[in-house]
Image (cartoon, rainbow, N blue to C red; front, side, top):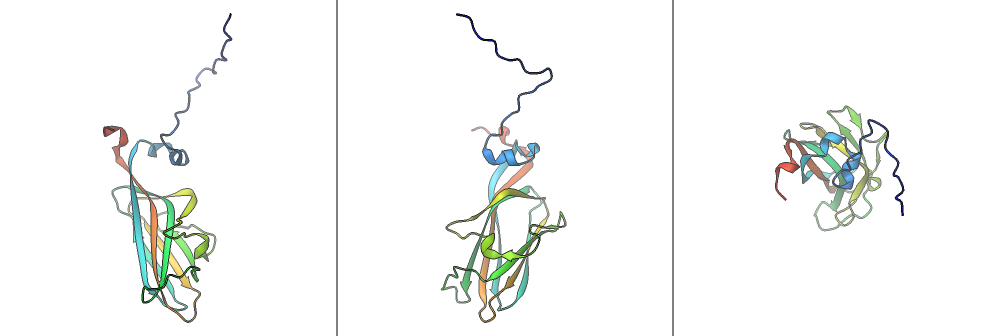
Length: 169
C-alpha cells in the first residue's frame, strides 16, 4: 500500500515551541526559560478602623519579576478570634511602576480576594516589575467595627539572570 503524503509547511514556517507548563503560555516568551520559584508577598492593616481608608504599600524585591496568580484576604475582628466571612470593604490595587490601577474603580473585596481555603485566582497573571510596589487601598464599609486585615499576593518570582535549564532535574 502506498503512503499518503503529508502537507508540507510553507517556506519559512517554524513550528511553535509549546511552553513547559500552561501558565507560561500567558506570559511573554522571554519569561519561559527564566528560573521560577513560588513566592508570596504579604501586607497587613491591623486594625482597619471603622469607615477608614488605608493604603498598604508592598515593595517587590529588585532581584526578579513577580508574576501574581492569586490573592487571599483574611479579615478578623480586632481580637483575632472571629473570622469575618463577608468582608465589608472595597479595594483598589495600583501598580506604581506602571502607573495604573488594576480596576477601573474600587471593587468589593469579595469580588477579587479569595480566602485561605479558596484563593482568588486571577483570570490572567499580572506581572510586577522588579523594584515596583503593589499599592492596595482598602476602604472599610463597616461604620461601627474595626477589623484586622491580612492580604497575601501569591505567584512566583521569575529571575532573568538564572535559567531553568541551568539546573539538573
